[in-house]
Amino acid sequence: MEAKKPEETFIDAPPPIMGSWKRLYLFVLILHTLLIFVFYLFTKAYS
Amino acid sequence: MHTTDWIVMLVTLLGIVAYGVWKTRNVNSTESYILGDRELKWYTIGLSIMATQASAITFLSTPGQAFDDGMRFAQFYFGLPIAMVILAVFVLPIFYRLKVYTAYEYLEQRFDLKVRRFTALLFLMGRGLAAGITIYAPAIILSIILDWNLDLTILLIGIVVICYTMFGGTTAVSQTQKTQMIVILSGIFIAFLYLIYSLPQDVSFGNAVGVAGKMGKLNIVDFEFDLSNKYNMWSALLGGTFLFLSYFGTDQSQVQRYLSGKTLTESRLGLMFNGIFKVPMQFMILFVGIMVFMFYQFEKPPVHFNPSNLKVLSETPGYDDQLDTYQGEFDKVFDEKQIEIRNLISAIDADDQSSITNAQGKLKRLNSQDSLIRSGVDGLIKNYSKEYDKKLDTEDNDYVFISYVTKYLPKGLVGLLLAVIFAAAMSSVASELSALASCTTVDFYKRGYGEEKSDRHYLNATKMFTLMWGCLALLFASTASMYDNLIEFVNIIGSLFYGTILGVFVVAFFMKKIGSNAVFAAAIIGEVAVVSIFTLGKLGYFNLPYLYLNLIGCLIVVLLSLLFQQFNNPPAHDKNKDGILDA
Image 1 (cartoon, each protein chain N blue to C red):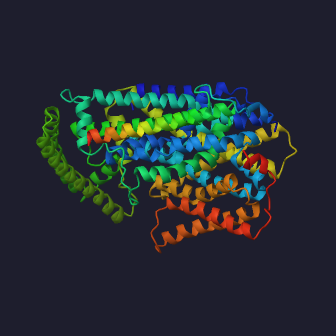
Image 2 (image 1 turned 90 degrees about the vertical axis):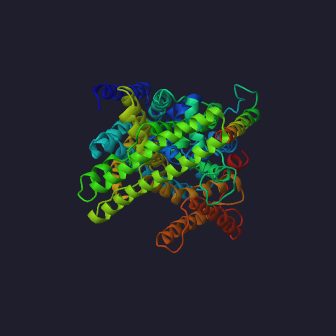
Image 3 (image 1 turned 90 degrees about the horizontal axis):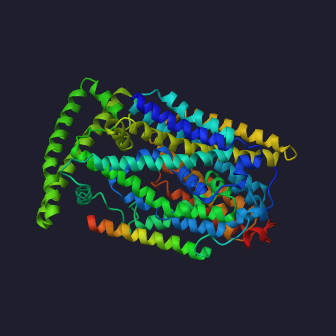
């Protein structure tokens, strides 16, 4: 099997948005927390 | 089924497959076959990951689950975004740096060949058995509802998947999954809109949601800590996160999806895509189930949703009149519910709390009567099974959504929704076959027997292994009727192997001092212990829910590895410490 050299794909570049991976991960987790909060409000509103 | 539906369904499915085959016409090396030349963009990876996880049974069962139990199942997925972030931070860079084809290849670099092979073998056993069920589970439901021959339905799903997976490998899988997911999401959304349109003219969407809430169906979030409750916030965040770490981090059918990324960045973005959209997607599917529930508050539902069971009872003397009695009582309760639901809507509109409480109480009583009548029909089915020694499943939630689709959707839309379900079945099976074949070639065949052969040889070998696993899956699917509860059976199979596999990977990633001999011995003992615990539980010595086997297997491997390493100093094998542990 012929494989590309690791460096061709292993480029630890920053994400195209938000500037850094740390910020992007934080964005995903905060978004998830907000979603759960919205679900909580939804549950409360219709119970 | 109407001709229009046949045309829509076949054109949709053949179009998806043709697109996948066309996009993979240049697959001519093992790397392009197994990893798609690592050319995939983030959105293809994200959709492919979602399509692999969402099997046909997801679209058949989940609305039925909401219909029966409300929205709380959504919490099951709350650990998923956390798992996605953990994998993107810790696991992806390691797999990319080592340029592995399979997750188990990494274990040889971290430990040695025997640990790699043992873990890969556990995966092959678990996933190989599950692939058959992934075909059988939707086939049995579709064959009953559409009155098709079961074996032909199994063959229809299986042969199409085997052909395009064998032809184009992982790229064909990913490319078809991309279009399959677009069709699936569009189909679900159209069904949702049609459900709103199908409500009675005097009932608005807001009214329907309000009534569903007052009937306890919109209970998404539950913060109460209760170990006996399967779905709450805490079981989701604690148990769910581990489950998804295990599934997405160590199951080759998922690992192969994101290893096909053009770069580490594309793969990470693919995981983030899944982390952001998976929970809303599940919410949407569950909400469709809620709307089906509301639809059946105004349209008389059958007393039992599996038409095959009803047919058997209605054609058997002694059972037919009892079924008629239950149906009569059920219809009477339905008519009473009509009045109370409209009273509830008026009370909600007027914001009259005492009238709301009053209507809620009456509806609760009527729903209890409903449940009692349904339980009575279940009892009839059980009695029939005992008397005639025939296995009939009383569980009918899986039939709720598909019954609605085939009975109430207009021509054309039925074909589209059936295409959605077939597409979902095919997308999961394709990933499984591709992963099984890759693992067999890379972790066993190439590593053990033919290192010196040409790339063309391994490409052909992988295609043959795809065919072999496809045939095994079909064989297993055709004998799967002997198992009572298919979904539970799949989960039990997974639970028997996942815990040990996760334990090995946890040690590999996070315990740099532990060598191969210690983890290998721990993994064997862990697997034997898990199987023993499960067997003893089946024999009635104790009652342990099978989901705990994941945790037990993982803990045994981690703790025993630590213990054995004390007697095995210095570490037996840590040849790749730089590449793995300091990543």
